[in-house]
Image (cartoon, rainbow, N blue to C red):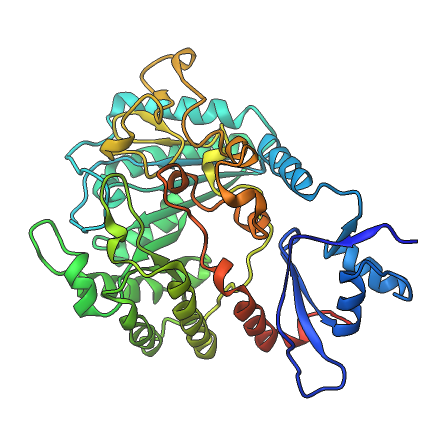
Length: 451
């Protein structure tokens, strides 16, 4: 009677109320990024494709959340069509600018070769013209600029020179201007932070601190071997305490790069952040160390399953302490910028790349990875560079993403890693059921129940 089926792209937890006479589970649709509480009775019926005696309101909830889909649906084809439509009709014009190739730090897991080169003034005009031309092609809503490096604050002059022109492009096209920065935080003094926020509308920052001082200072040291923990931590505290931090809606995301040498220091590090009054001001990011270029940095990393297991403890700690923490990923139509042919990265030499990890990395300084150079005519640019055809690669079965239930919320992770022979599966693939239970504990009253 009803031509529906349980979607392949669902995850179901164990029973969350074992003592009850009405067993319930949490079901999560990676097609929609939604989750609901569902009774064992309803789950059994839809698993068996038996849609008799299910109320129309319940069917609507299940269909709207894409927990069930039309029986004839080719689900993977539907997802790919949605992804490609998203790329063709993007909401955001996204650019990453790496204005300098220099950095004070000598982190062992960094794949970049740092030099004292900076984006020259004669390339400014070319870069601004390129951004202006791309943003005029479609009806974008947001102009997104990400400042990266090297260390971007070593190229503060370039940021000061270029930002007003980029803001003007947004104003001319009636776009929201959204600027962010990935910085090591060593030079992010309160006065610099204030200038970046007030003058150049950079309000989102990612700063890496690799756990406790004794661990951080073994790896994130200057090129002359000097420790950096105390300076960076103090900068984070002072910047997050500025009145304009809250007034302007700023956020600092503290990232921890994790392997076997420092994973046990993450929980005490979070305690220190909490004791420093930062829980309501910052967000946390936990990332396993992976290989970058020819630097085999992952040799001491935790296995993906091991990382996922300890990550749950960290997430629980954050929730108990009152941090804002996103547990469940939403629908993702692209893994990152690399699949969007109009999203570009510019380095200090004017080179154009599809991925922000390509610049200053010897392995990727080839024609297969470089779109072109800002100093040259656009007619010379090469658009079929590595990573741009990632969705074609997935369809062709060059990764196991095609058969993975998490593809709609992951997009394959990092295509660069896949192309390097290192699968990029995210940690939530291995701890999603625990995440769903945590979400239920935190937002029990917000989850719709289908009983």
